[in-house]
Length: 215
Image 1 (spheres, helix red, strand yellow):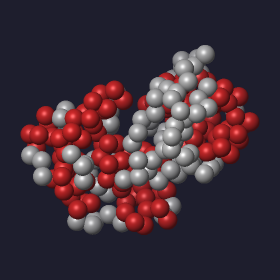
Image 2 (cartoon, one colour):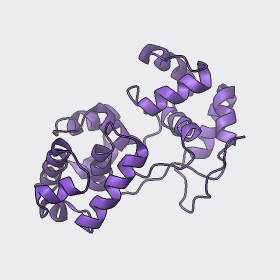
Image 3 (cartoon, one colour):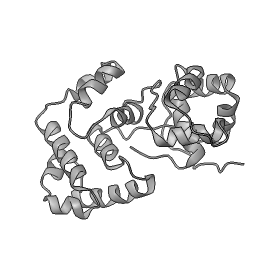
């Protein structure tokens, strides 16, 4: 039996209960995973800059390593605003565990926010692909990072991050008996999850790690 996660004290997205019911009805494997985690759900920290910065921190490293770097960065930058981050010397960022390239990326992101170069207030009303296009114009933000933003900050219900290694591994274990899953195979499997592919992805992540990442 899978371990049950801690009870969440924050309200679930409005669509969450409906998405759970429909996913469990359409996919028996996913339904079993969903029933194993009845008291936790996706929740947003609500701050776009923090979400994007944390996503950059988490690129290509484990969840545990990303958490460690993020904790040190927050302790160093204090309130984690663009101004507080830009006030730090590059050496201070590197001392938090950031690579030189990631230090450059989050500094560039902070400048975009400080200078108003991103249309942050328009994002809630924009289509997913339009948000992705704007975000990926920023150095260090690729499609995966933009998709994490759509899921964890804007709470978009139907994002499928095909390049996410955790999702690929979870699908391999749950559906393919450990065999590799191709992007095409993942896309075909996920047709049954529409229009709740973000929710399906979130529960498949839980099958690997019961504690949610808080972007």
